[in-house]
Length: 275
Ligand code: OAD
Image (cartoon, rainbow, N blue to C red; front, side):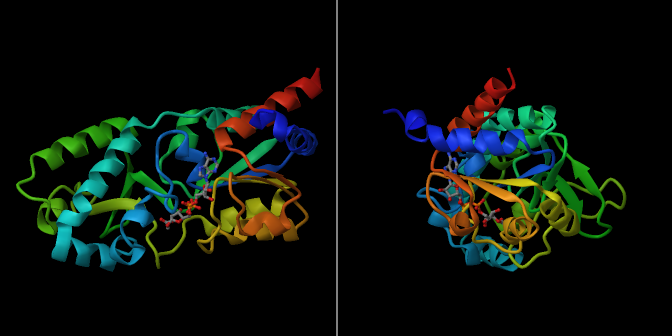
């Protein structure tokens, strides 16, 4: 039996639950972008498999590592730039857009910083860990959005011309704030920093009638509370993840498949039910 056949009952159950929903939400993690070519954080080959979060995941740790041993970060950064630049939407992103158009999906709460949900056409996306392609001014807090591919192409070109991969040289690449000319940094949330749009994400979770949990290990807080809040407020929970995660206990339907295979199959079933 192929993988779709194996989980057909779960796919049908998820389709049935979603077909009755009007305020569904999705809580997304890096697994959603895995089939787009971006490595997850904690699976083999992911960034936290290559360097420790203490060295790179906090602002102070990153600065210290760049001061002391910038060379170990160079291949990690270059691989990240390459994969984020080459990433393409996968069928799961498109299935989420379909669910929104069908009036089922209201909000996507994503931990991802890759912009792919918005690029796919999802309208209501809450990026709780920020975006790699938005810069924030360290002085006045102004934000400036960039387009993913041109932004990364330019960054790679600038990196190629750097004399050496050092903190000082990397800082020289930071864009200037158009408002106050101070330095800008990527508007991503590092460990120890405040999650973005927290009230909106909690409200969307509590208002959900169904929450899809998609491709996340569920180990980073406060984001990992959102499904718990949704559940407490009465939402049915559908989990799509190849491996079990801490949400298995609050899950009504678990589909142990890849996001890009499972969610389009669920959406196809909903469409079949409508005819
Ligand atoms: P993780 O790398 O921790 O977890 C990714 C999850 O996706 C794992 O459970 C995998 O089994 C699953 N997965 C892998 N391939 C998949 C696929 N094709 N389809 C569906 N699921 C798949 O990534 P996150 O949970 O997103 O935070 O990590 C949470 C946070 O930790 C990130 O936002 C980031 C990181 O440190 C910050 O940077 C603040």
